[in-house]
Amino acid sequence: MEVIWKAKDFARTFRNPVLTLGNFDGVHLGHQRIFQRVREKAREIGGESIAYTFEPHPVQMLKPERAPFLLLPMDERLRLIGELGIDVVICAPFTPEFANQTAEEFVRDILHAQIGAREVFVGQNTTFGRGREGSVLLLKEMGKRFDFAVEGVEAVQVEGVIVSSSRIRRLIREGDMHGAAKLLGRHHLLVGQVIHGHGRGSKKLGFPTANLKTAEVLFPKPGIYAVWALYEGRRYLAVANLGWNPTFQDRKFSIEVHILDFQKDLYGQNLRVEFVERLRDEVTFHGPEELVVQIKKDVEQAKKVLRIN
Ligand code: RBF
Ligand code: MG
Image (cartoon, rainbow, N blue to C red):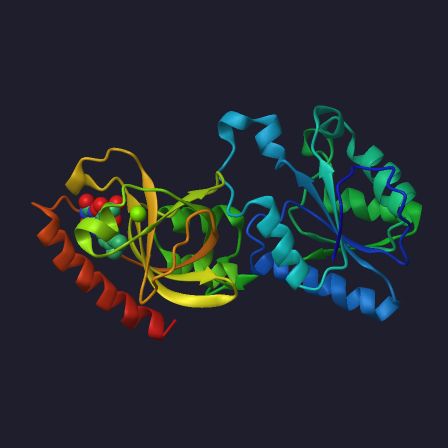
């Protein structure tokens, strides 16, 4: 997959471009359906499939105080879009000037003049342009003028629930990882670099943990989780603790992962963590012995959960 980090004026021309437009935070089942339609149409007309997206997320620029924590950092979003078979992602720097374009200017100058879109697929509720004035309806009208076809793709429903990034965020904040996974079509993921913690896990408890430094994304509700740790293309059974280690009065929030049957030193390495199930709240124990008894139980429970997930 090719990534173009420019709003317009890219040198590249496209063959029969089939395009979609959006933020795609989470790359959830709804987005996946749109990408699938784009890919099918591109194959049908011998065109290139293109996703047009923005960085940073528009609300981060327009209303930073109201911006949600995102489900995925940009590089992960791109990786997932690539895995879904999209040929080109155009990632427009979302500047004040860019945000100030009217919806008509955006369609005329970028979708039509710059890209030469043949077909455009968007979610039914997509908005774009200054003040979010542009809609599917406007796209359809302008498509007649500039000779491209527009299709509003219906939202995906799972068990009667409409898949949306905001609903998924809510489930993750509540610790409902199975609920979130149903709408994402995959487990919620945190990616980070392993940094130095206290060294207490290995020395004092016999449960070494990799402490993660992540991008500013949405964290699941604090607590203990059964997780998959992904490292160098392999999946390992693991448990994670998101919290403050109250037993040791740490006060600082940390994300720690204990990988089962794993000895390697991971400092400085990148680790991906898939959250499968929340096991319990973090508890203040009377001392390390009590905590160790509980961690052993957590490990056993995580094994059960992960064997079937
Ligand atoms: N610390 C706590 O203070 N309370 C807990 O309930 C708790 N549960 C944990 C469960 C697991 C599976 C793991 C790996 C760690 C847990 N910890 C908990 C964190 C522990 O205090 C920490 O890993 C060590 O202090 C090293 O930083
Ligand atoms: Mg540690």
